[in-house]
Image 1 (tube, rainbow, N blue to C red):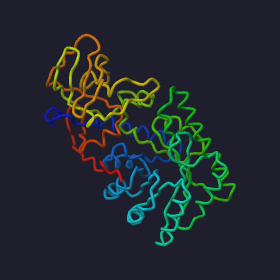
Image 2: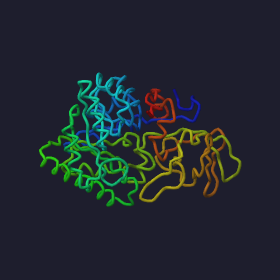
Image 3: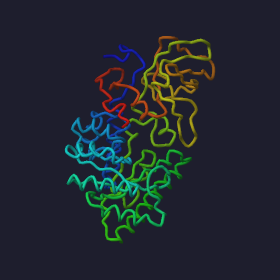
Image 4: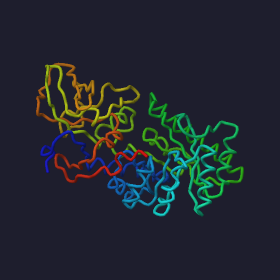
Length: 374
């Protein structure tokens, strides 16, 4: 089926780029002697997860239990939630333990204690990692705090829990201003974890896993020592932000939004049918923040951005595009491809993605874990 045989807006996934991205990340991580456990929140697709596992990934990460339940239903049997799961979800966690190898993170002693009591009462064991704040200042224990080592040792000795190691997310890498800053963030992350690991092991507790995860820092994390696992997610599709952070080129971006020009109210303005309900309202981040809400490619098969077109404003169903110089030949009915600022959010906005070879749709796939926010 040709892409123009379907209505728009549509989310297209270039099959060759998808497979190339999966293979490239796996090769880099494997060459460094690390395990790859990609974060599935980017694609929310069992089909894509199976491609990643077939290429060598040891399992996946999920953001929420709802996502994990969808992937478990699809036969994915090794799932990590690098998210602070509350013990009120004990019934769902116990049900998942019957089907998959499951691990979660903890960064609060009361929460860890509640999980310990729940698992001990059920006669079960739950794998846990301690989340460490390496600079993003979201979740995680402060590694410089006086009680950091004691916290990890305490968690490791709780009944009903199996301590697997330390885990971090250098999310502040998304706000880096240069390659050198990204490299420094990755190096600092590894050093923080290595120092805490040394202190914990001096306290008599083995730290078998040291896990990091972020696409912007991934190319630098493979050069660090002491790590065992990487958990990038966005690399599978990439997006305009990753290009602006030097992690990819537009030729690597596998996900695009196919849209139609629905209005041309002025010579310097056209309207696309992909508003915030398709493109999402995220701004791009990067060494220099790109303006607007996405990059419009020059032609369907092109990897070059049309620099004269700026997606300057989004309404729910409208993308207002400003013609910056000269005029555009685009007229109502014409179609364009847009690389979004943030592909992960786009995945969660649509029910289906369309796998394409060139202009041919080879497979339509459900975004099975879409909307699983609990």
